[in-house]
Length: 215
Image 1 (cartoon, rainbow, N blue to C red):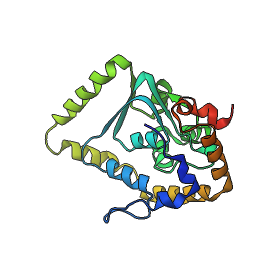
Image 2 (image 1 turned 135 degrees about the horizontal axis):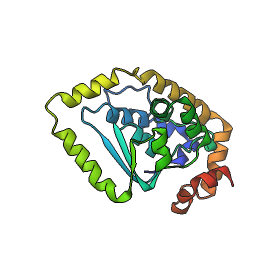
Image 3 (image 1 turned 60 degrees about the vertical axis):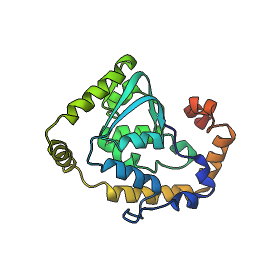
Image 4 (image 1 turned 45 degrees about the vertical axis):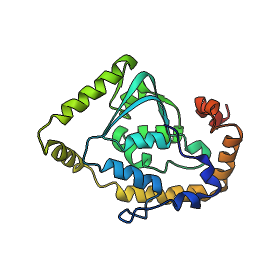
């Protein structure tokens, strides 16, 4: 699951002006609105990661109820900071809830690539499973949940969500701060350097953290 298109840095207004549903909060940016739709679904949502999920890809997973990854092949990162911006689709809101403030700061400002074992230890994902077990585990979990009596899923989600403050205000603050970082010259300069170094190509994505930091 790739990150957002870095080319938005040349004209942030094209990102902000993407279509908004008439019933959606227009104060949120398009990716926030999309992931909030997913987060608020009445169904249980489960993510399976076998590969790399950086930036928006990672934030998509954070909008799901549960996340599971291949121990050998799962990797996550919030890679925005070296390009001069902060995550803009929920990570600054959801990662502290999942892993705590200190670890969230490490993930977001350190911008390292996390293997599935470390991501599980930090709370980024529910479990890191051996690759050969991943495909069997998730359908079994989904079937068990689907067999629950009517009303149990909705009640369980509502009761758990009630223990947390509504993240809307935090998302709005994230959106404001993201706009501020986009407006700074460093964001354009660093992103253009990354694009020139093939950051948004297949080979560049394989070694993105090293490329972004220039070492």
